[in-house]
Image 1 (cartoon, rainbow, N blue to C red):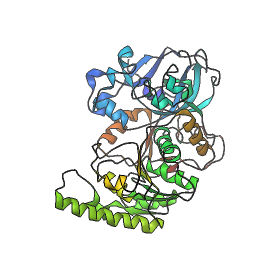
Image 2 (cartoon, rainbow, N blue to C red; image 1 turned 30 degrees about the horizontal axis):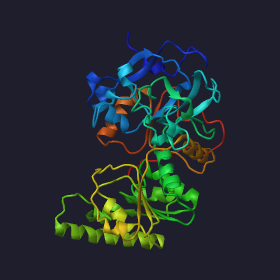
Image 3 (cartoon, rainbow, N blue to C red; image 1 turned 60 degrees about the vertical axis):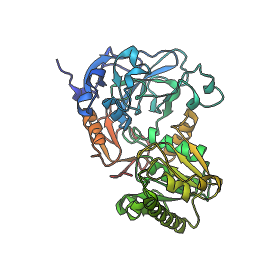
Image 4 (cartoon, rainbow, N blue to C red; image 1 turned 180 degrees about the horizontal axis):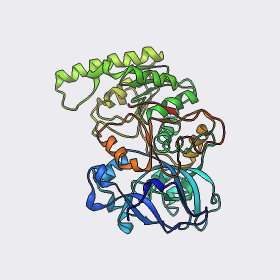
Length: 418
């Protein structure tokens, strides 16, 4: 008999007791491919929590591009590492809000019934890097719901206790289900890696995208001045609403984008366009930026290195246009600039960032909430670039407002994109 996924919000057990089975969107090795086919709903056993682990009832789950990769099996299949060889299946989902349902041995800070947001960094408690350096440096470091199974596209998920954060009472389940991966990444990049301060000037690429909307708000909350690069005036108005001083439409400087195939003449023309862009940034901010927020990579990185001021910092967490970077290094060493790599965030950074959400100083930005049945289609939309912003999935939640228990503005609903 087929699963009735319309009933996923209904449970016949109370917190503290797990059912034997649960509904989950599962990827298996033999069906890696298009997300619409790779994700199939199955009835699987509910995992038991091990030492320092927690089982969370998922109320809502955020959609990220990492599980497009998991579905495709590209650039690498997830099934060769993490806990996938042990279980043989992948349940994706690296963002979630939910309710603690059962705790494992050793867990003392959380109890059944607690309302939580889940961050996606996992590491072994036995790695020495976890105790004194940074969990992101641990050899066991993994992104939950991508490099591990038991992600959030299921009625229940299994996480490490250190992944849990108190759910902001001013937000609904849907509101707080989809900011963790991008927001906490932006927080580490700007606050702890680039060390922005009040009065700093910041250039944000893709300011209306999943990372950029939070980078822009963090600049405002920190007293820094941000200029956002966007793809349309409409998105520019959104980033101004989020706190940017102003915006630049990247279509006005198309020639500055590096392809890597430029001959000498083409590179000369490209550099001329980059100089004009840098001049525009400086005219908006009153000075060259102290920090450039990078995640585009190949197309923009030469312009970032050129544009940031002497002794300034370019902080990068990804490379959506290509990860092989080609730039004139003279502008780096002669002006004593810095390039900083950054990857997600540790639990302490996630906690501090989450407090800003609870205080209303930063708000989630969402474009669409779908029912549980929407998991394959949501990932297919991302794969085909048919989405217009951040998508979240209702699992245990039955509407977009459920879970908000204190007054607050909630999420900003907008069609966004870098």
